[in-house]
Amino acid sequence: MGRFTVCWSLLVLCLLVGPVRAGVEEPDHRPAGAGDGHQGDAHLSVALPDSPPLLQSTTVPPAPSSLLGPAARWVERLRAGDLGLLGFMRRVYLRQMERAAERRSAFPLLSGNQLARIEGDQRARPEVARAARALLAAARADLERERRAGDPAARRVARIGVLSAYRPPSRQFGNWLANFSKYFRQTAAARLSLAGGSTGPEAVDLLARFIEKRLAAPGYSFHNGGTAIDFTSLEGGLELTALTDAPHLGAWRRSWLFHWLSRNAARFHFYPNTSIDEPWHWEHRTDAPRLAETAPTRQAHGGAGAEHHLLLDLEQIVPGP
Picture 1 (cartoon, rainbow, N blue to C red):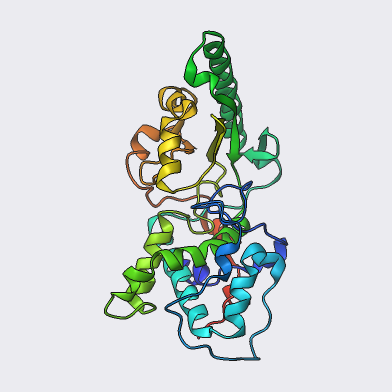
Picture 2 (cartoon, rainbow, N blue to C red; picture 1 turned 120 degrees about the horizontal axis):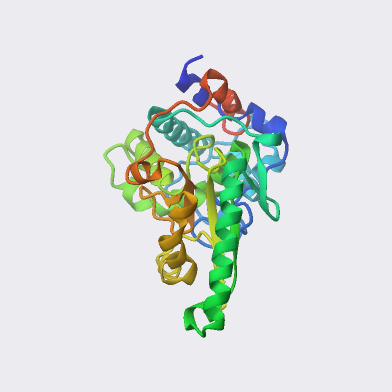
């Protein structure tokens, strides 16, 4: 089966795996919509200004709300009438998957002894989990020492920890669905100015590229590979999570934890991914000094069997033409 054919089908296994807690760009433990802001699911009910006319249909089966999670209202609204917009969402999704497959192979599913606990319910590959535990222990020891020494920045920190580590592709897909309406709105003006219109081929490519800078395609995120960690901190009463708005990014870069990670994370083989703008996101790589400077390149992650988790049927959620 060809790579794009596999990617083109994305979600039967997702439905078999069971409910997904959707609604975030990357982390597992944030309110719905917390990719670019803690908006809950309020964004799911806003008007879509460049939607095609509604086309009533009784032939489309209902989407499983357990899979869609907080995205259910928005997607069900489309299924009830706006099939043109559903088709656009499908094309954007497939284009992002296609672009991801051009760069590298998908990560294999991980389970059992392929994962180990970091802390709380956060897990990663065993060697990554060990390194993360050591990093956190060192950071907390330095934080305590600096607090005792009266350092103002350290005294503002109430806690540090892990926001998100490993997550399966099914959860990544739930995140993608839950955030699509937000990305749709954010690109409305740019898409409307394109020659093919707001839902034409150029708009598909524009939105796919826009999303991939904020949320990796399911199966291709380093979180899916068990090697990425999103850190979190409570500093000066502000919860530092994974919001990508400018004020939050600025707060992250001024934080005690970010400065500590910048100075010390490499000792534990954690490096930032310089192709994205996420100061909370760090990846465990033994060859990271080279890889962290460039976008990830195509590489094998388990051969043909590595893509079996991509047999997820998008037709179950978004009908084809």
